Amino acid sequence: MPFSVGAHAGSQGSLSTWRTSSYSGDQGGDGAEASAYSSTAVAVRDAKNPAGPILTLQPAVFSDFLSWAAAAATAAG
Image 1 (cartoon, rainbow, N blue to C red):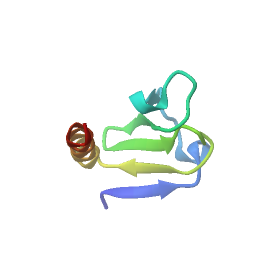
Image 2: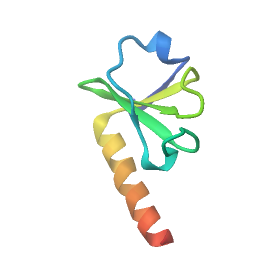
Image 3: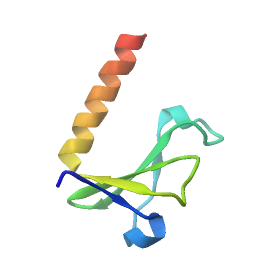
Image 4: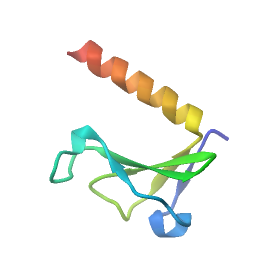
């Protein structure tokens, strides 16, 4: 399966440092955070709700998503 949803960060085992998206700004807010969960998964969570559910994606799927998001942002201007 290319993705799964976890209950919250505490139930997902040991996560490395979370990286905040550029849309979250210095004060948190409207954006997402990502963390390498393992060599086979990237965890993604809502920056406004770090204790909430997280989505885990295969690295290739996460990479495809980032490429899509960058292209969409460029197209939107």
